[in-house]
Length: 411
Image (cartoon, rainbow, N blue to C red; front, side, top):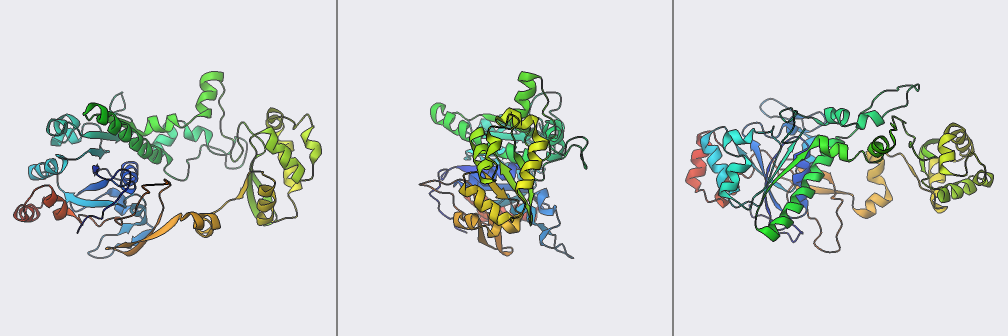
């Protein structure tokens, strides 16, 4: 295989992606979308754990053939796969040869794990001082929890997110609720990319690489924003408010004739426009509703009044009417709705790639849009070890050495 050329902003950077599941692979995919050559290191015979997290499957498990999850497809495009047993000395040696000229290494093993195989930061910087080595863990490289595993669900609870997610006490179904996507993993993956790119810029100035320490706990806590600031600076816990915003109203889900819409007014000006378009201009001067603080204090009465005013029209009608009046509003879409949405289509939000393994895969596009050096989609999520010999040959191994590693069960 000849590596497809790219003019992306990170073209020329070589990334070693020693990650699995979600946070690390997502970060590696971002780097790949932006043009980096990303080499995914996977355990021989097993691969990334996320390949087996199903159903749903893009390929069902069957006799003699492992399943392949749709989950894996979400975070592993633009990568080449090298399957290697680095528990063996020969595997470690092969990896060090691949890493010797790399720019970036991304890993998400438990703290200290890779050092036991001679693949920790200190060992690798000795052979590649310019290496930027980014570790993603649940709790970081320091502190009393550093040795713990940290999955997304656990971190959502420990880092405070679930304390502000879910229905309010006293309502049906009240209680802490996780966010329906692995948001702590996603945040950590994005923060890893930000940290790596900052380290790349530092290397431009100093010539030196460094170790970047990213944790899911830190990433999730840093994203609490107003919930954290409320407690830290006013001693107030915002708590769970379901689909209502704790500090703005009306800002939530409202029932209309054929379903539900979201209305989100975040200032007095927008509320005045909402009041006009709903046929209740008197709300603008009503002391119960005139200011945002008034509306938050009188939320139940306002919700009932808005709900009553919405009767008689459909979702599509109200979304059009409200947006024409410059009031923030929209439908509650599932993925099928989103795929058919005219704006998503116009933005090219979904696309299809040819795949050696599966014929085609359909994926969500990168959110990064540039006037120049745009993201590119060059390699579909790879099969396990699909590019092993190619990668090792690029690192200087001969075909005979590659054959011996395969016969010895190293690759």
